[in-house]
Length: 203
Image (cartoon, rainbow, N blue to C red; front, side, top):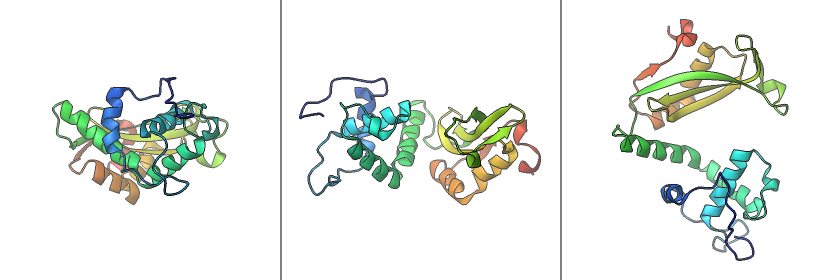
C-alpha cells in the first residue's frame, strides 16, 4: 500500500489468491509495528509479496520497487519471522498438505538424497566455495533430502570440493540437521541415494 492506495502492479513472484489463502493462516499473529505500538500499517500480503520479490530476483532490500511497503519494514518482518523459524514451519505445513492431497501420510517414511554442484557467483567468498573435479565446477554443492514426492525435508550447502559421502554425513548426523530431520519426518526410516554416497558413508 503506497499513499493509502493498495498497489496494483503484480509481479511473477506475487502470490495468487489461492496461494495466499493457504499461506495467510500459517503466519504469526499480528505484532506491534516495528516503530512502536501502532497496529500493522501494511497488509500482510504485501509484506510477503515483497519478501518473495527479493528472494526470486536476488535484488538488495533497498532496491525493492516503490509500490511495495518501505524496504526497512519488509526487512524487519523478514528477520523477525526468520528468528521465529517461520520458514521451517511453513515448509513442514505445506509439505503435509500436499502429501495429504496426494493421498499420502502427512509424515514421510522414506527420503531421497542427492547433491548438485553449482557455479559460484563472483560474490561468493573463497572460504565457502571449492572445486568439484568430477563436474569441473568451481562453486558450491547443495546436499538435499526430499520425500518420495520431491518435497523438501532438509538442505545443506557446502563448498563444491566436499565429497558426497562426507557431505551426507554432515547433512544427516550433525545435531542441527538431525533435529530438522526428526521434526520434519519423524517416521523417516528409509533413505535412498546413488553410488556417490557409498563407501564409508554406508558403513
